[in-house]
Image 1 (tube, one colour):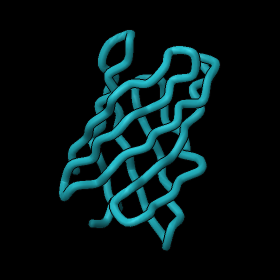
Image 2 (cartoon, rainbow, N blue to C red):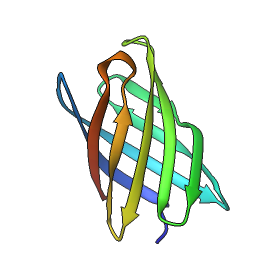
Image 3 (cartoon, one colour):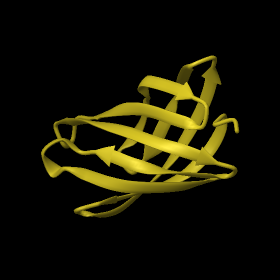
Image 4 (cartoon, rainbow, N blue to C red):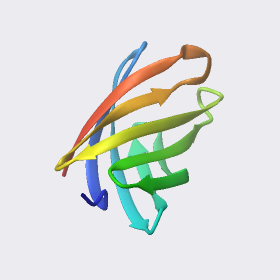
Length: 97
């Protein structure tokens, strides 16, 4: 299943749920795109695709950390875990917009 497209993503952090819009484009095993939310929009980094497994990271300068996402695409659903530096891991889930 292709990860390409726009996703409505909810990250359930220790500070509460954070909603973002994720726009992704894959090319082979490479994943590019942007993640937009209350703190603005930025390009994703280190994006990869392997079958239905995806991973990427975004800088969160307001928090002083890089957030790393690893998840699985299942049809129009995307879910997984995000690593939040010293805050540990947080689940995320999304649906195709």
